[in-house]
Length: 336
RNA sequence: GGACGGGUGGGUGAGUGGCUAAAACCAGCAGACUGUAAAUCUGCCGCUCCUUGCGGGCUACGAAGGUUCGAAUCCUUCCCCGUCCA
Image (tube, rainbow, N blue to C red; front, side, top):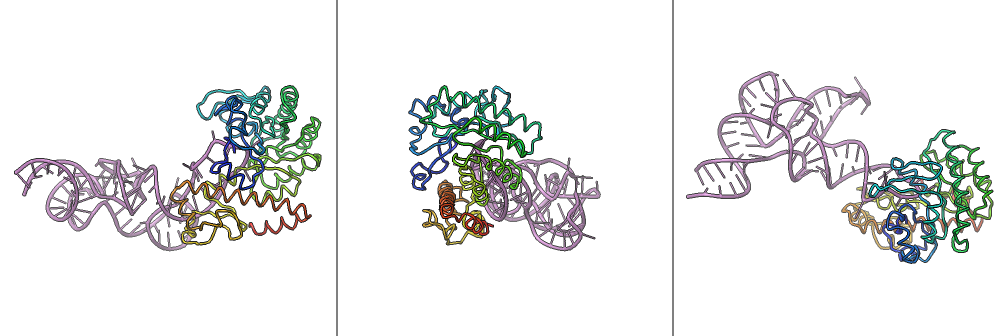
């Protein structure tokens, strides 16, 4: 829900899907419509009519993905807006100020997410900066925030280097955040490396606090991350892929535009109970997609979100019954 | 009957002697997408052969002839389409 909307779904849809929490983005909402406007409108929950929890990302990822529009130094990040080219400065304190104005439930600190692969010296320097920013964020929130209403999560960086990940995890834990995020992964490195770094971190983190792996992932990868002790994830994949005609099923991905579905009367996934699968055929959905109808986006997004949320529900259930390993290997085998 | 303008690959439409199997866009086919600058991006898109190479052969810019080393491009005739005049 980057721009205070999950593209293609109404808040009502999201409630029907049983979405527990959505993510919104500091950088985007700061540029448009502006955090002061949202504060004036009663905060982000009220503004977008979403009574359930919201997590706000800090703009750290934009530092990375808008790389040719930014300059980073220890003080913070100077961005040029991707919308009108205007220049803006984001510091750890400024990011918190915005997120406090938005009133999100979980506030992410500003971090620096760097490209993969990055060399050791650069990664070390950047991770140290992120750690320093986390300290500043914590201190700023202690002065200006309301711990009864919001909680701030720290972010661990350290690239693909085990010792840097370890050191940054330990140092961040010293700052005693209520939750910890792992950033800077799934940015181009091999999945095995993502897993190795994740395990390096989760094996050190306290069990009673949430662990959030930022920006992932594919369904079959999520099963691995959960197995490594991850509690939270966020990802554009289900919604963006939906807009691009890629649908997730219990048997793997399905590209709805493929000509083989032109006359296919079956639902996307015969085992799926979502509103789209209960009502529409592949042939119809392919037609909507290829004619560029926006109902295609709406229905495809609904299905993919149902798939993801349903899978997460089943994962929780499997964990509850001590069956995660079986569930994971069964599902991964079917997804391939 | 006459005067102009025009007929290009599935579509729209560039190209007015060699760099053109022919721009671009659309359609079609396939792929990608991971803390959302994304209803986006990439590849293929005449037929065919193989030793898959910035390879070979064939066919192609309304039709048929011609000029030229070389023609979608120039010339002739014909056939269509549009506009205007009688």
